[in-house]
Amino acid sequence: MNALQQVQPAKLVPSAFSHTRYTIKRPWLTFLGRKFYVYGPDGQVVLFVRHKMMTLKDEWNVFSDDTERVPLLKVKARQAIALDIVTDIFDVASGQNLGAVRNKGLKSIIRDTWECLDATDVVVGKFAEDSSSLLRRFIPLLLGRWHLEMNGAPVARLDQVFRFFSKEFSLVVSGPPGKADTRFIIGCALLALMREISREQQS
Image 1 (cartoon, rainbow, N blue to C red):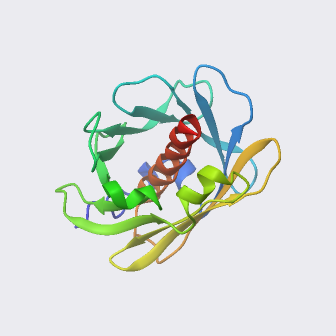
Image 2: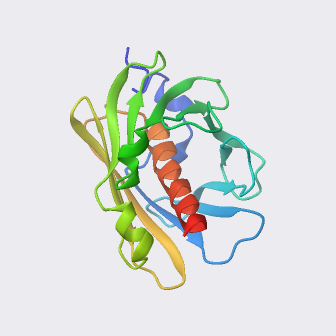
Image 3: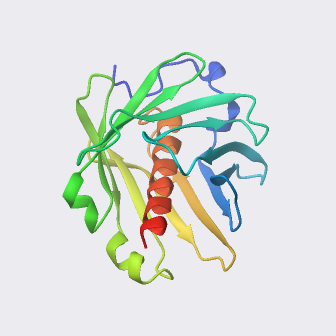
């Protein structure tokens, strides 16, 4: 069975991953790292992540809330420095590898692009930016847009929403049930936003 599909009974998957629409917000002022709050369609916080700014190898957890007591996902890069860095997304409770993404090196200079891998590192999809990260580096008012596809079929979209004093993004999970694991989709979306942080620091 495809490692990126839902392989656990639905009742074992936290309700945070049962929605098809999410709003991801990053407050304007954060200290000792960047904070992201993930809201469900009812406006309640369902996930939280704090990204540390000074780390050799990119690694961070996604928690159930900002108390950071219950980790649900771990996102961990295999390499510290490489053109094609592979980043794994794990379910913390079970230790299950939900899949990985591999950065497409030089191709990502203009637009962020990743290959989606299953647990055996077989390419099963693509996560790509539809806007231009290069242009947005020089024109910050341009909004970011990304899409995720599995076996050629779209399964999710991530779109930036214009806000003056914060960063806000809309994540929509689409496609037939079981086409892709929502945990993996959210991990990919947050990874793209971490890439945005790196770009801001380099500008």
